[in-house]
View 1 (cartoon, rainbow, N blue to C red):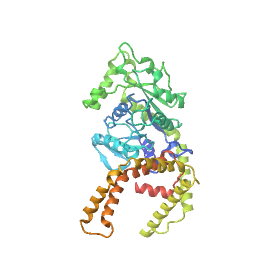
View 2 (cartoon, one colour):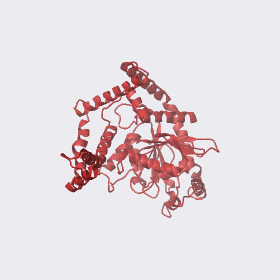
View 3 (cartoon, rainbow, N blue to C red):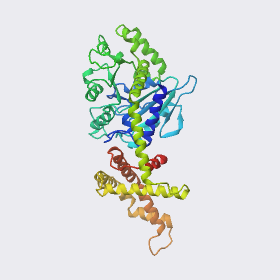
View 4 (cartoon, rainbow, N blue to C red):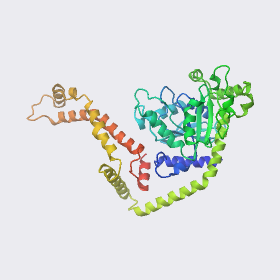
Length: 454
């Protein structure tokens, strides 16, 4: 089992490094064929707490509003007792994190690098591997929480954008849906159950998790749900008791919280008969075993797609021809040729030969000019400021024409001012290319080159 899940983890990392995220792809990709467990739930459903209970560490960003703004591919690796636990990000392959508060900070920073310091979302995943003796071998994909309204600073389309992203993962037949629902709300209003029922009406791919059982009104319980009487799924419902916000604020130890959760189900009369299959520890073991079973059933299809992908890449490499030279000059020529080919394809989008150029034009015709108009050039280019810059640059020496050094400083200061909007425009174009999947298809050598750059 360990080898199977580890192998799929390696393939997932390779897919991400080569830009294959599987979302909104017109053709089946290797990512699509890989079994995965996607964690789905509404905001404040306890989704983050469930993941942290499975891992046994506080490592996820917390706060109000939409906190998870990019998919997080979380790969858990069980290591021998006595070894120190640590975490690694795919985008920082040579750095080990032993402080999990730093892991949380890096997730936030990497999200901002992709989306900017805004409240936008992105479908480009973050890959995080955690090595610990307290976990089981498992891979989970944490998706942004479903919401019903946009908050300040977000576009009105954010509700639909999040739902579209979640659907792009869970509608795949190889995806196992981990539907998180709070017990202190009516199950009929559960965002996770609603969307999972739409893509998996038979419930064969859905595993229900009920959170906040200990927060239900006195005199009520969740037995009917946990026994599958209220809403039946193929797999039994699992109830969990997460740490309260007060526990989180006090940094209550996660292992102690697991023991308390176990005691709650064992000592509560309504749930005593279900205690053997309740709690985050049972959930983690069940998911690991189920993922192994699904991987085994998908091995022939995965192997077939890998062989086909290899054959396609070899055919493409054959079409490109042999490397011109192995010396530095030959490598430089290859790099220049790759850049030239990419430039040519990009130009075809702008010229209308390929689709999607209108979205790129929109950035430069609307977004960039609007940002430049908001800049305050009046003060910077006022006569007093120009005179001051020229005087400071060249002193009071007489000139027949305006001194060159003064103009240079004036131009440099202006370029610094427009740098922000210019970089934002470039980032917006990159996001359009990534999220809208414009037809800028890279050949094998280009993908390898870009992978080496990153």
